[in-house]
Length: 209
Image (cartoon, rainbow, N blue to C red; front, top):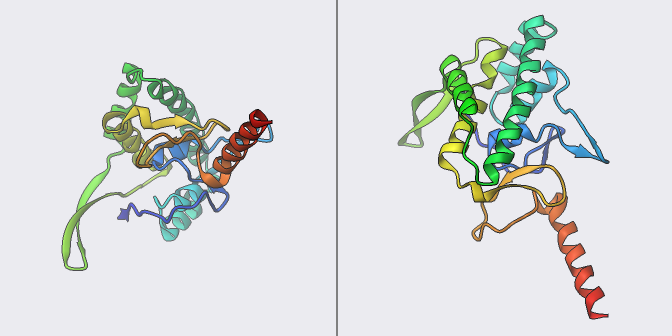
């Protein structure tokens, strides 16, 4: 049984960007724009397992077992292809949703099919004497890996404020703004925030002159 774990914030983990503040957005960001070209960060099943580990969605033991059992198989390759294709459909829907448009009916239907076929479960956990519930999933084959992402996308569309979800003003990364004011327009301070502030400062200096 696999427990979803939160991970300390960091822009890069094991070669992957995590600036979305939301699993579905972080997954969409696995095809970033670097040096003017789109870069595929999930070229194969091994990379996909590494991303799930970095995202805190799979532990090392499970990832190793999946790599040993499925690595190099046709089923694993198909799962990677399907997840990349779904990522691009999700990206398109997220861009539309961020602009204030509702989720498309076909998107809702697809998410419902995915969540039915790959469910998330809930279990009770004793956390230092306090009981709490937590989501978890128990993947049996490569296609089951989509479970937490499909449920994350459903939660995004149904419970998040679309005005706080946006694409970075300097790059193509998507993020959910969790700041108090909700007015941030860059994916992270380390990647783009400092550049935006430096550019704004330079512009102000130019106007003064």
